[in-house]
Length: 485
Image 1 (cartoon, rainbow, N blue to C red):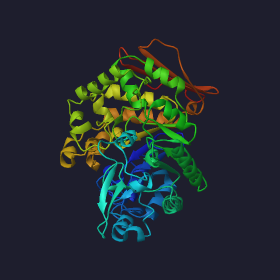
Image 2: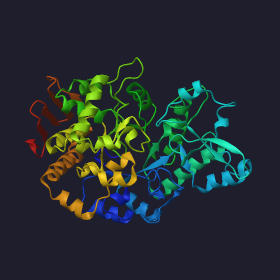
Image 3: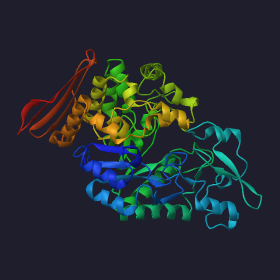
Image 4: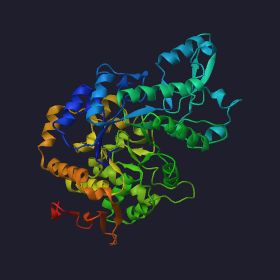
């Protein structure tokens, strides 16, 4: 993956109707801004109950967006990351329908993970409580087969998302076949979606256990053999994230979004500085994604302290709600149909009270900390919370999944804010200092200074948090010493 800013987007929510239209936009209106693009699920169907993360057919591009040849064309013009949905298939898939029709005689019987494949006897309440849950309620859904038999099936996320047995031969073959299709289409990187939940073992949390690491490592090696890099998506306690990073190509720095809010809200960089001392370097940095703003990534776990005191974290969450005029409350936790109760659903721009200066400072911090920065399409356009979409779907995360028209995009591209944001993106893409050494300069906690040095070139980000002033200076042989902001 190029050490340049990457775009995260749905194909059909960024003013485009197809993959080919997106390719044209990246080469025209957004030319030069992104070293690659992470395409959120484009499989059939894109409009399932979980916005494509519940594919009926993982190896078929939704025909409304195009086909694999269109993706191959895009991959020639720009690096492409795609999601490998590791944990589950759709309840509407042909495989699961065959399972319900034929039961144990189905060729897909071993693909579907039933409760009795993990627990030989009825699961106790104590064992259920051990299972790490992304949502309230039981991790199982009972389905009736055609012959009348009832089976409890693992459904970690929703009853429409059927967990697969990744330890079975057919489960392994299912994932490998997707990798092969990706390779032929020119996909250069995959994000392992929900991989932390893929391995279930009785008596454990069924989340990021030893066997999960082994599974991820095995799948990573298979991807690498096809020339595909791997990003693992895990929301977890920060020390667990550090350990995971040692074993994979890339992880997300999911602690960063809240730490940046902490830095700005409290005019205090101490928690962020402490994290940068220990944070892994093989990371993809984000402030926003198609999911919410994660809390578990900085919170305490049991008697282990988090990156931010829990009392401070509670105030940060409350400040998000205040800044969004409580619109985020309507999309968070039990207020809507949320899969992840440990996330706050809100656009990052609204989380900062729609303050353009604060938002530019937040992005500058993201671009200067170690890692490859990704920018979510709503964040690219400094989007507001989409209350109309939330009202229509009652899906909390839809508040940050707006469908942009070309007219809306054109209006943003003409704005003063976007001109500054574009200048920052291009600087991050083009300055050679970001391929060098990183250091946090010693300052008071109401200031933050980050520096990159590569031979004779350097770039420094300096922020006065008390006055919310941003300053970026740099040096190279062509420009000599100059001020970007």
